[in-house]
Length: 263
Image 1 (cartoon, rainbow, N blue to C red):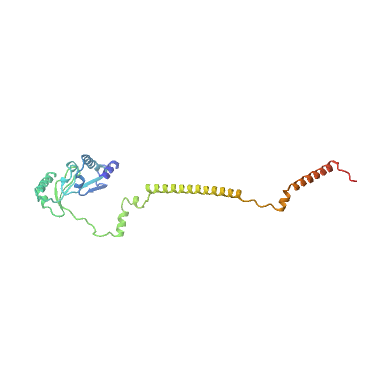
Image 2 (tube, helix red, strand yellow):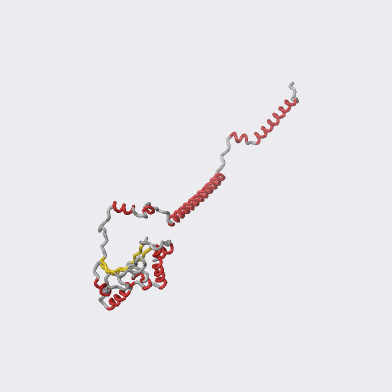
């Protein structure tokens, strides 16, 4: 009924079609109406009354018409009534009530409905003018069908001849909300793991750098070689200064012509 109401709200008006585009069959309809609230019954009545203009047909399948509320039953134009049995006083009362729901007929419907056999029914439908046709006792013709699996070629032909084939032939596996959210969560988790790994690697590198610097400071210095000891001694530095001073003085005298004459 939710789907039916949704279609009623969304489908466009198409008027009085020769055949409905979509048909709903509510089998065991007494379960639908048993214990239904007034608001639910009012919604069903309104939907059944108006949805015919949207190209949708509704059939309620049940044992007796009394299983369907009177307001809903009044909106149903086509009636197919199979046999009713009157074994108890309640059955007889239900039979009389059912007969009163049919238009006036030349048949003795109370008797006729108890004599119908398998495949027989009393039928009345809406005419082209929207009025109920006279009641007719009929025998339903069995459908021309195959009692077994259909051949693959026949099935393919039936599918390809459908008006919906062009729209639904190619399967479409759209990305669901669950898949999209799962992918975003996985990407966020991977990014968080990468950031955590980078931070841990940086922390580890800083720790190793500090340990290396601490080890370098605490490592013992090697003993200087003999040449380093000589060069670093005070005597060598004093001698180097004296030689440098004397050498610089001689260079200056030779440049300015003040060098001492040799005897």
